[in-house]
Image (cartoon, rainbow, N blue to C red; front, side):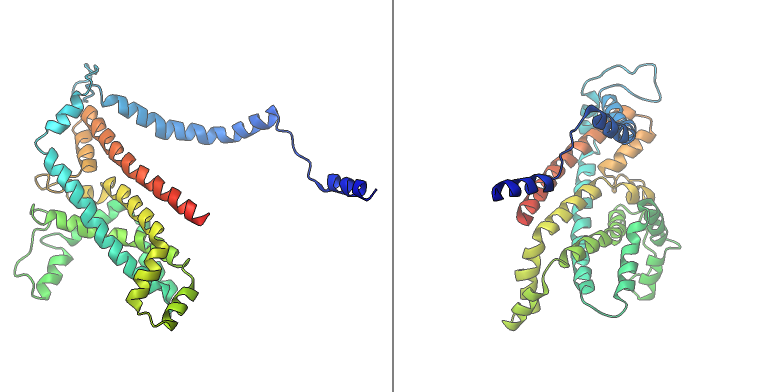
Length: 312
C-alpha cells in the first residue's frame, strides 16, 4: 500500500515530457532562417564566389576573357620575384609583433591584478585602444612617424639620440620597425584583457600558502601563476597569431606595403593586387592565407579541447 502511494506521488511529481512535433520544428526553423540567410549571403557566398575566381582569368582590365585557367594564378604567385620577401615579411610581422605584445601585456596584467587606488581608471585607459579601428591607428602612427612633422623624431631629437630626422616610413630598413611598433601598441591591450581575466581564476590561497613556505615572487610566478593559466596563455597566443597574420589595416594605412615591398605581407599584397584589378591572383592569395589560418585554427581547437578536458 505504501509503495503504491509512493509510486503515485512520484508519477505526479515527475515533469510531463513535451512531444516534439513538426510544428515546433517549423517554428524553430522560422526563427533561425533570417540568421542563416544573413550568414549565407554575406559570408559563405562571397567566400565561394571569390574562391572560384582564383581558378579563372578574372581581370578587370579584360573582362571579355574569364575562362578557367586551373592553378595558373597560384603558379604566378609562387613565381613572383617578391614572393620570398613577402613570406619573410609575414613571418617577421607575426613573430616580432606577438612577442612584445605578450610580454608587455603579461606584465601589465600582473600589475592590474593588485589592488590599488584608481585601478578601474587605469584598466579603462589601458583597454581603450582595443576599441579603436586598426586603420585609424595606422593613420595616427603614420603622422607620428612622419619624417618632417612627426612626434617620434621630435622626441628623439630633444633627448639627443638623433641629429637629423629619420625617414621612418620611407627607409626600407626602418619601415618594418615602425609598423611593428604600432602593432605592438595596439595588441598589448588584447593580451592584458585575456591574461587579467585568467589571473582572476588563480586562488589567493595558493599564493598565501607559497608565501608561508618562503617562496619568492618569481618562484610563485613560474610555479603557480603560469602553470595554472598555461592553457589560456596558449589559446590567447594562437588566437592572436591568427589575427596578426590576417591583419593588414595598420600596414596598409602607414606604408601601403612599401617602400619597395619591405613591409608587404600576404594580406596587404592581396589588397594591392585587388586594386590593380587582378581579382584572380588576389583570390588565389586569399586562398593561401585561408590555408595557413586553417592550420593555426586546428591548433587552436586542439588547445580548446584540452582546456575543456581540464575543466571537466
